[in-house]
Length: 207
Ligand SMILES: *Cc1c(COP(=O)(O)O)cnc(C)c1O
Image 1 (tube, rainbow, N blue to C red):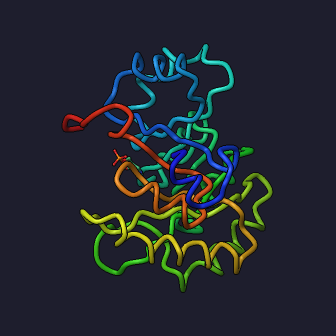
Image 2: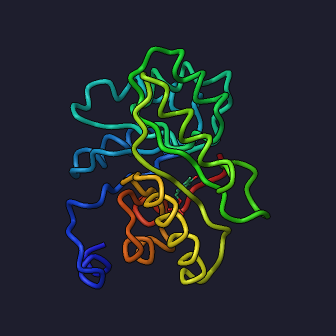
């Protein structure tokens, strides 16, 4: 991260390192906390529900939901996580709004037609942003994306750049982009949140 920050002429405080802990036990989250990490990301509501009781004493820890969220799990997700990074429909946003909040949300944007099924398209984004901004229990802080997988991190750059442009168009500051293999490029392109799993914790077993 430091190397990428130097290249980009950016400061460490501009970036939140979100440690992605899916498939790892609560003890790993605790160890990471003891090493100084404070932001953690999980993909499955049920998986985190099982770990959360063991982590209740981690003062100042923030948990981000980064997986695909089904509307029927929105209530539980809002109880377990302080940030939902993957809001991709007004329907899901309404469910989160109904929980009473406050919930910090980011909108997941799908920038490539193939690949993952979740995320709002850039065309859907303006209406979604307007809807979320009208919901008083939601605090919209930015956009999130996951480019199609590629060996070459440079392939992610146009997606990161596009996300930044979309965020600028809509006056949003937060940009959650970049994972273990392409976070340096994401930092160069303005990421405010990088989501790092395997580079911190090693390879994951099957979930
Ligand atoms: C698993 C996951 C990550 C972390 O991936 P790594 O390649 O292990 O760093 C980041 N973001 C999301 C949405 C994920 O599902």
